[in-house]
Image (tube, rainbow, N blue to C red):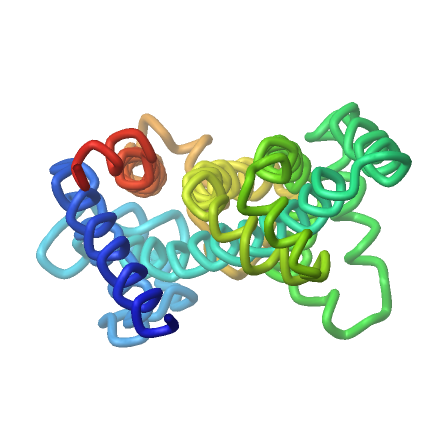
Length: 299
């Protein structure tokens, strides 16, 4: 029985993978995102340090030495873009992971058990949804940085906490809705009749059927997190200097946009390409996990 189940799972995985790569834009987006990730990971091998200043060489236009030009302090924009991508992608990935994790826990408990627990958790969710996002982001960021805990002195970690704290509500509502539908299905009733525990039913029977929508939601969350981090850094409340991020590079470029347009162009393009790639990956995952299309193909 276990061997048969393994074969079915492998065939389903192969079917989903095949359907995903049929989506040409999603396949291209995977390649683009992989290049961005690799470039950010190996940013240490660039010719110039992102912090290296050379005031006598400031505002150099893009050339063979400085591919993306230099900024007002003579720092190489290309290396700063790569290091900024490392920060932005890290914030996007981990804030999405924590927000999805919290959202799944809240949504699963709320949707499966219902009753007073559902009401209490959804009221908390509604309360978080009413918060003015930008205002809370700024206040929470300032508060966390004033704490004496060593781990909170890291600006990147603080931004991850802030974004995750204010973005778990949407996956929670999504998962709750899925659980409300799936808990009434026959396979769940059969598991209950056979004496299955609530934890086993949630983890083994219901949650695996929610993976598709959760993954799609995760791609949207990650794209949103990258934009949020860039916006916070642009306003000066995100990752603090001298750590480069795409948002902070844009912020320093605003006063030089006509004198040195490349300072705003390259980080803006990187944000655009990254967000578009993640969104197209989400489209591919949505098509790959579409139960109606999968059922038709298996027929």
